[in-house]
Amino acid sequence: MKTLTAATVLVGCLIAGALDAQETGWIPLFDGRTLDGWHVACKPEDRAKTYWKVQDGAVTCDSRGRPDHDYVWLVNEKEYGDFELRLAVRGYRESSGNSGVQVRSRYDRAAFWLDGPQIDIHPPAPWRSGLIYDETRKTQRWIYPSLRNWEIDESHAPRGWSWKYADQGDGWNILRVVCSGPNITTSVNGVAAADLKGDGILNDEAHRERNVGLRGHIALQLHAKDELFIQYRDIRLKPL
Image (cartoon, rainbow, N blue to C red):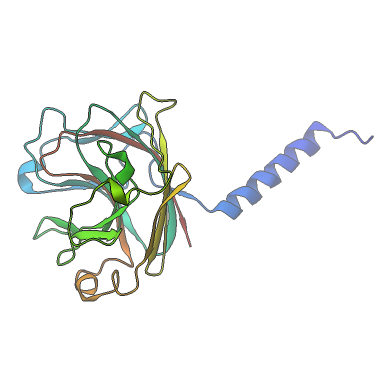
C-alpha cells in the first residue's frame, strides 16, 4: 500500500477545491454582514424607515407594528440575464406579511415601482411560495399558474409542496430559480413549484416597454401595508 504524505494530500485537496470552485462558478450576492451591493427602493416618505437590515447573519425585513408604508424593495445593484439563483428563506408563523424575490426587474424612480416577474414568498399561505406573479405594469397577474389577476387559491398549489416555519427543524427553506431565455423554473426545498414557458409573456410589449423580463435586477420585496418579519441568507447566483 502506498502511503500519501501530508503535503500530497494538501495539494490534492487544493486542486480539488479549485476545480470545484471553477465548476460551480457561484457568485455570492450577500456577504453575511452588510447590505453592500444592495440598496432600498421606495417612496420618499418611506426612505427614513429602516425595514431592511442584517440580523443574525441574514438579510432581515421587519415591519412588525409599522404597517404605514408602501412597497419597499431591497434591490441588488447588478443586472443579470440567464442565471441560476439559490437562497435560503426563513418565515415565521406569526408574520402575516408577504414577500417575494424579483428577478430580471427594474425600478422606475419616477413612478416608485419595480417592474418585472416575482417569485412569491408567502408564509401565511406557504403553498404559494415559488409561484410567479408579474409586477410589470399592464400585466400584474399570476403568470405561473396563468391567472387573470392577483387572486389565487390552494387549488393551484404545487403537488407535494414543501415549507417549514422557523420553529421547525433549522427553519430554513431553499429556493432555487433558473432563468433561461423567456423561461423560469423554480423549486422550494427540492419540490418543483413553477415551470414557466414565458415566450409571448416575458418578451411581450409590456415587458419590452419597461426593459424587464429577460434581463434586470434581483430584489427582495416588502409588500405595501404588511407587517412582515422574514429572513434571507446564502444568496448566490451562477450565470448561465
